[in-house]
Every structure is written in C-alpha cells, then in structure tokens.
Image 1 (cartoon, rainbow, N blue to C red):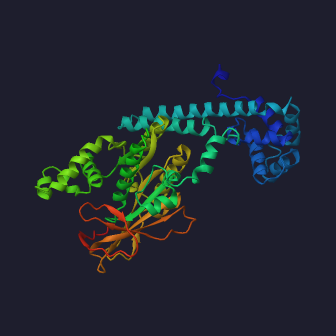
Image 2: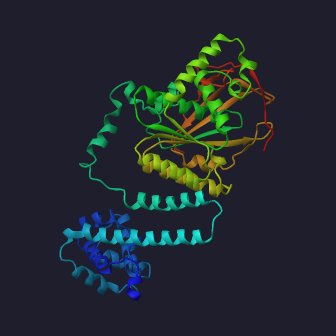
Image 3: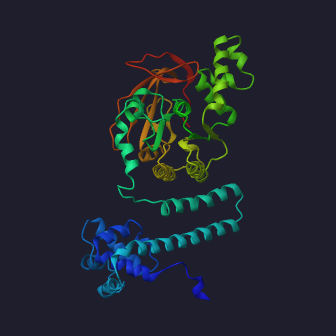
Length: 454
C-alpha cells in the first residue's frame, strides 16, 4: 500500500505542538530546546514553527497575535490556514504539560526521515561503485555520526543537572599548578596564561616554511603525552601525519624526546652523527625506554576530512581522547581553495566543541623569497575559525637567506581578541627543539636555505 511508503510523521503531534507554544511561554521554551521548524513534516507546520522561532529570537512574546503577524509579514499566513488554523491547533491541546512529549515525537520522526535520506544517499553512492571502498565506508559512517551527534546527544540541561561539571570550571582557578591542564605546549608563559590547552578547542598553529610549526606540534604532542603518563591518565593523543611517513615521523618524534638530530635516526645515519658519543648513546637509550610508555596513537593512512573526523569521533566515544593533532591543514585531501579550507576549519571547530577536546592543526603560511609578501594559502580563513591561534615566527638574517636560532610565538584567543605579547624562544641547533627564553634573544645563524616560493 502507498501509505506504507510514507516517511515517518505525526501531523497530529505537530498541530498539538503548535497549539502548546502559542498558549504557554514556558511550553515554548521547552519545545524549542528539543525540536526546530525543520523537524516538522508538513510544509504549513514548518512555516508556522519558523514564525514562532523568528518571534522567539526577537524576544517578543509568542502568541496567536505575534505569530500571525510574522506569518502575514512573510506572506505565509493564508497559505498555512490563517488565524483560524492556528486557533484550531490551540483548541487541540488538552494540556501544555505534555509539550515535551509532543516535541519529542516530532523530533524523533525527523531523525528517522533524515536517516532514510542518508541511507538512500549511501545506497546511491554504493551503486556508483566507488574505487576507494574504505573511504566510502568512512564517509557513510560519518554521515550517521553527524546525525547522532546533532540529534541524540542532549544539548540542553538544567543547571541542577549540570552542577558538578559546571562547578569544575568555576573552581578550576583555586589551586596553583592544578589549574594547568595536562594538554600543554611546553612553553610556561603560554601554558600558565591559557591554563594549558585543555580548555581550548580548535587550535591553529600558523607558520611559514621551515619556521617550526610542525616542530611545535610535535613538542605539544610529547609534552602532553608525558603529562598524561605522569598523572596515570588513561587518555591518549591522536596524531594524524599527512606529510611524513612512519619512519620520518618516528625520527622526528624521537628527536624531540631525546634532543638529538632527527637525521641520526634514519637508516645508516647514527654513526655519521654520533659515533663514540657517550652522551648521545645515553640519550638514545633513555628514549628507547620512554618510547612505549607515551600514550600517543599515530596514524599514517587517513588523509581525508571525513576519515580523520570519523577516527577522532571513535576515539572520543571510547572516552580516551585527550588531544587530536593533524599535521598539517593544507595536506588534507580535497579541494584546495579558500572556501574548502574554511569549511574544513568550521568542521574542526564544531567537532572540537562538540567533543570538548582540543584539536591542534598547523596551517601553512608561504612567503615570497624576500620575505616581504605572504601568500596565506587559505591560512587567514582557517585562522578565523580557530579558538586559539599560535603564530610561530623564526628570525632570519637581513638578506633572508638563513634562519637564526631564535624566534617568537604570538598567541591570540579567537580573531576578536588582541594578540598576546610575543613569547621568545631559542632553537637548539642539534635537534631544532624550541625552548622559551626570557628577554631579548640573540641567536646564531643556521644553515637552512630560504625555500623558493611555491
């Protein structure tokens, strides 16, 4: 029968819901916390609830007169049945005390309809026989993950229900060192000012080629992992390496851990750099012992936004995610234009807020050969979505052909906040490790050639 093919709906619940919100201001508050105009099945119900939302946003009383006026203003009053239909909806209401049940019915049916649509889209995509089946499965899972996150996770709790969590935030500033979260940069000035990265969400590291943005990310990873280990915290740091393969990543991370040259940990290079060097041998031995104790989970196979988002969600569902790092933004597969970058940045920002976990992503700034002009490669649009931006600036010689062993980090809480005074650092030539310094920094030259503009 054709009726069996109708999508999930309950028009009676929609009409009763409309009646409740027109009759009782408190009922309106409760209803709009559960469902939206888009959740209604009938077009007329969508238009009426849209008018309710418009009046509500203007902080005007929601009643028969104000909603009728809004519908008349938008030219929808007659097509939705006029004031007579609104009055009929009000007359259907036995009691506004059951408004939560009515709103829940409407919202539940909306979720089912959207699930049917998502399943249809997945079916159509499968019939197209995608070449990358793994990516297809990840995208399919991501569709339902997003639907679940938006519609099933409770979004509105009373202050009584959220009291314990709320007070953790209020009381976090009482005790000295305990105020700094385990997610840290390793720069005391930055960590003390921000109370660590744990209260941040989407963190963007800005930096030009060879300025040290990925090095800074690796330092954040190691510092956070060490804090988690010391505190016996069961959470982990997820690290998505989009630029380095496993061998290069291991060499880079090991270099950060022990303070030795990254190149020494590549095949056949140890004796070239540290033959008969007792101190280097001791550092390497300590690193070998420490390596398996660090709660870092690297991934080298995921390169698309959907696959990275799905992996972050899975780890968060396990309750084990302390920090997610993606190295680096412009390496994420897909369209490489400003609009695409901005959309991905918005997704990271929303994901980090939803999961209440910081996500740290370096973003490339490309400079001309003379260093006077910046080609942001979407970095401006990306940075605008960041809840925190950390800009790494490496000092250079006047002719811009060599880097100095010094630099600074400027950090800014959202694009609306003023920049914090630069935090100076020195670069240890042996490993490239950046160490916070006090006062004016005089660094020596290094042998890195300034890269040609790409």
